[in-house]
Structures are given as structure tokens and as C-alpha cells.
Length: 568
Image (tube, rainbow, N blue to C red; front, side, top):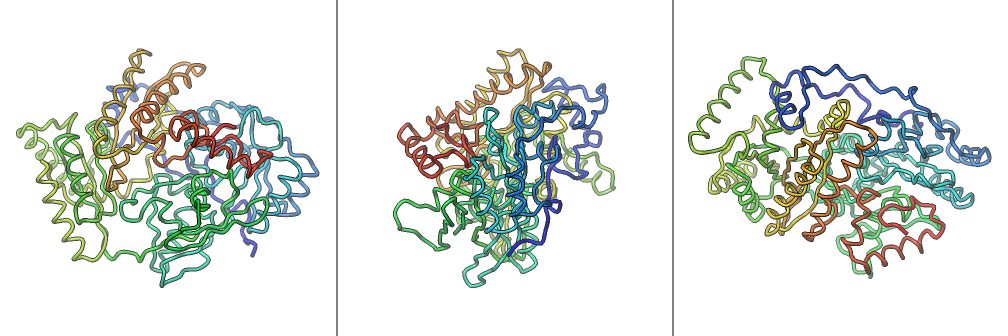
């Protein structure tokens, strides 16, 4: 059945940044932020003028290359209102939300844009568009929500054929829920908030909340092997997606939503993380859970990173099953405290005095509350009895590893603000500061080495450039054998012409440490083109040959998002 929605009903980003609403980062109500920015990156916000909103009219947008016959054929499939090729939509859909993408978009580097955006409303329309793509030798890039930070939706500047981007935003319904199995059939174009709203109305949740939740889709999560903040309980996307329907040029690929598979090499696993190179994911059957009656996030503080990691490891090995367990290192804790708003209400002023008193007490006990102290957040869900029991166990674990409990207040604030971080990156770009992330997985025995050597590599690059900069990290997504390390870094630049070279020096040094220490090139941000240079090191020469052979046999004409994941 075709969707009654049109392309204009689909949520989209600003052409130059994250989101399309009134959310922006406001530093003026955070008294600790400006001093931190001055100290670590040399940014004096008090003397800087307010930034001007970028205007697309300031740049020249090259004309599209879609021929009239192709346009007519596509319009016959999806309707004229669902084939868009105006300048703004083409620019929006030609870039993901990686740092290089946003830098190029803001500076009008439009060497190669997609030529049109097609919005199918059904699986049949997806198949019809694919037939046109192959018959007329076009390139097709599935877009998802466009939130990727690895170059997965960015067209190749050398591509001469017409390029279509496919946006499934019209296909966003929960189609069916199997109450007995806890499975939901869902159209792949649904954004995170729409999905949870539909499930919550019926008493269910999928529990998948990546940082990009507001502007990312179910199909995009599956295509890039996404991980959400609550993966400790609900699993990574490969555990959540139990079955799929994928539109392939030769028909529909269907993977069964079954508890286990023993049918040779898993087609299901091949499609997960394939970034559109094996077809277009049209529908997913996902594991869902009843909405928990109680949810609480408790904050803890450890004297330093090593004590905190020991505590997180002990929690992961305990009988407790938290929804998430996260630990910020000293620099990230410092950064988090700099984001605290100035107290205005009587209650917030009292709490600020309590915090000052606590930090003074910790300093008297030998804690370094400015550089080493590490904050942690642990989320508990379930019945009241279950939550209280697990909180008591975790409190003992934290105490036995030198930490203290801060209670539910800071945890509630963290839970409310968890999706706001991307707006800070836009804010920094306004002042010629790059802010970006790199993440990887490591075993518990290797975690501290990866953590320290990444810092060493990053600051060596800054020293080479005689540049200021800042890095911080948190541990998240715990597993029995290890966890994810999520690094954030910021560095200022002056000349636009050399900015990306400096950025890549820093990021590449971090990524190389990952691979050198036998950690994956990415834990959950996909490969695209940004992580592609390390893929052969990551999976080996023979592994790369196997994957290249899969792509080449499936797509001999290189029509389906060519160049992503591995070079030919």
C-alpha cells in the first residue's frame, strides 16, 4: 500500500548543520563554558561577535544532470510531488553530518551534488525505481535520515552518471506487533521519535537510542550497524533486528525473524552494515519490549579513570543488568561540569551549594576534582523492587571501587539532554573550531591501553601543528568481554584552505591507534568513506577480497552506493 504522505511531510536537516528546529547551543547561561573554551582551545567567546546564519544564496549550486526522460519515468512511479530537485534539497541530501561534510557544505564546496531526491511510498515503488536505475545506468544512494558521520551518503565527486538519493521518509509505520513473540514489523523509513511514539502508544519500546535518534531512521540503523545508548539491556541493532525485507534489483530478499539461524553464511548478517550496496532495506522486524514501569538514572563519581573502569567492569560481570552504564574520563567530566547552567531557582541554588560542599570534601580526601575525577551514569529499569535491588548492588560495587553515589538528580539532567550534543558541533563551527568523535571497541584487558595511546597520538599531532586542542572520552556499551570507548576532540583552525588537512591529521592518528591495537575501525558509526582507508587492515586482505567479491557480484554495474565500505 502506498503511503499517503508526500515528500514535503518528511523531516530533514538544515542544509548547513544538524536538525531543523529552534534548538541551538547557548553558552551564555553556562558560566563554566567560556573559561573552559578559552583555556583548552583559545576561544574567547566574550570578544567574538555573534555568528551569522549561513545562507545558501551565497553559493553557486551547480545544475542537476537528470535527463527529462529519466525524470518522467521516475515521476510516473512516485508522482511529481515526490521527486525533488530544487537546490536546497539537493544540497541537504548530498552530505551526511560528518565534520568534513558540514565544513564543505558551509563553504559551498559543491563539486558533485546528487541530481534528484526520490521519495517512494511503498516497496513496489522502491523496486520500480531500482529498475529505472539499472536500465538507465544511474547511481542510487539510500539516505536514511542523513545523520551519518562516515560519508555513507556522500556522492563520489568523480561520478559522471546521474545520481539519485532515495529517501524512505514516507514509509514510517509500525505495521504489525506480535504480542506473544515481542516482534514488530516496521517500515524502514521511520525516524526514531516516530517509531518510539507508535510503540509507546501500545505499551512497547524498542529501546534503541543512538545520539542521532532524533534525525536517524530504522533502515539507516540497520544499514550501518548502529548502537544505541541503551544497548547494555536492549542490544546493538544486530541483536534488535530479527528479520528484514530488502529490495534488490532482482527481487525481494527476505530474512526470517527467527531466534536462530543455521542456513550457511548468513544473508541477514551480510545485509547488516552493507550501507546500501546490497539493496534497499524496506522493512525490519524488530524485537520490542514492554515499557518498564520504573526507569531511573543514578550518577556516581570515581576519583579517577582506573577506579571507574574497575567499577564498570565489576558491574558488567555482576548479576545486575543495567539499561546502560557509562563512565566519563577526567577531561569529559570537566567538560560536562562546564555545561551546567547557572542556578536560577531556589532549589538549583541550594543544589549548587551542596555540590560545592561535596567537591570541597572530596578534595580534602585527596581527590583531584578538576582533572581526574570521573562521573558515571547507570540506568535502571524494571519493577520498583528490581530497580531498588539493582541500585543497592551497584552502590556497593561503586563504593568498593572508591566511588560515591550522587543520586538521581544529575542522572535526570543527563537523561533529558542526551540528544543535544550535535548542536554543540554546529556552534563550534561558527567560530572556526572543529569538534568531532571517534569510537572503537576494546577488551577489558586492553581498554586502558587504547585510552591512553589515543590521547598520546592526538596531542602529538597538535604539537606538530603547534595548536591548541582538547580531547575527552567516555566508556559506554558494556559487554562481557569489553566496552566501547567514545572519544570527542576539538581543535581550532584559521585558514579554510588547510583546515581539513589539519583535521585529518588528528583524526587519522586516532583511527590508526585503533587498528594498531586490534580494535575495530569503528564501533557503531559505520564505514562509508571516512573509515574506508583502514578496512583492509581491520578485516585483512582475504576478508576484503571476500567482501569486494560480494559487492561486485551483487552490483556489477556499480549502481548501488558505489565506493562505500571498500574501494573496488
